[in-house]
Image 1 (cartoon, rainbow, N blue to C red):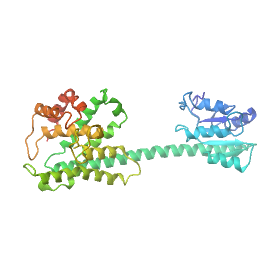
Image 2 (image 1 turned 45 degrees about the vertical axis):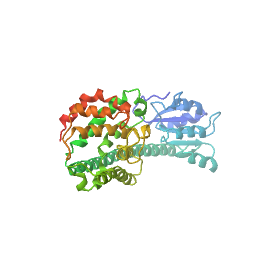
Image 3 (image 1 turned 30 degrees about the horizontal axis):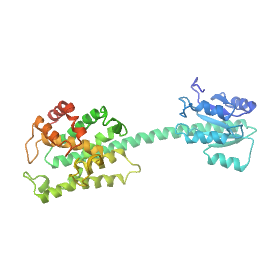
Image 4 (image 1 turned 180 degrees about the vertical axis):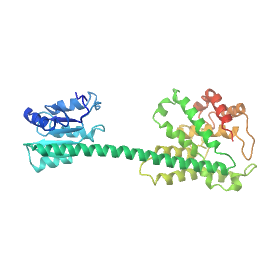
Length: 363
């Protein structure tokens, strides 16, 4: 077992010949905490738990002999490089063999360097120093990239949310609709997480991204003409057909953003699902794809309930606000036809919280 007893970096020396280990400990002992393993099996036991997971304290670098009984250095190297927690530990192959085949096999297998015996004290120390410093630099660089990536992610999320808010203002509503939608979604999802019917499915999801993505549900309305979007009377069938296009338009907007990003972003995945499908109905009579039941993504089923509740309880250019209790009854009437019945069954448990949000964040 490797223990972190000092502030020094840990170097694991793996060699079945004791004198070689002692020499390397002598070379490196002033600058590093050295630990020894006399064969490949012992080295793996020092790094991995019995279940295959990496131990909490790991070496900063490994000096690894190639030729050992049972488990040789190549097998140890393969194990280290195949595990997420150990793949970035620099491994320096040490061997009496100076064949090009052994060297190339080690380097192609992920070794950072190759040192031949007998050891040159200055060369060993310099190479270990260089690779530990390089590993530390790479680790810090990865952390910096992660921080910058998070900053970029927050920036484009904020930009999209501002765009969604602008659309609400264009619709003669305040950005409070976006805030209410997000808060209502969060409350409903939290309750669903404690429900046996949804817990397993939601535990596989990224809840934070799903909740934030709910703000973008109507982003496709940016393409709807004002004469229809702001009409203070009932829409004609032709006008309603135009309104319905906002679901596909919103999905295409999210797709165009996704294409410009190097990775598949969960936030945009949920945004796409919600934009595209939050007007689908449980009975298959919704739009735009007429999906039915559980074929409708769960994120869209959740936002469908939230969006209708907020639309009912809010003033719109074509109607007055409907009282909270009446709105809850309308949701209940849509159980199994418009809405997922299992979600509707949970609404009474969040009714008080829904009312509080509706009153605290009125337009």
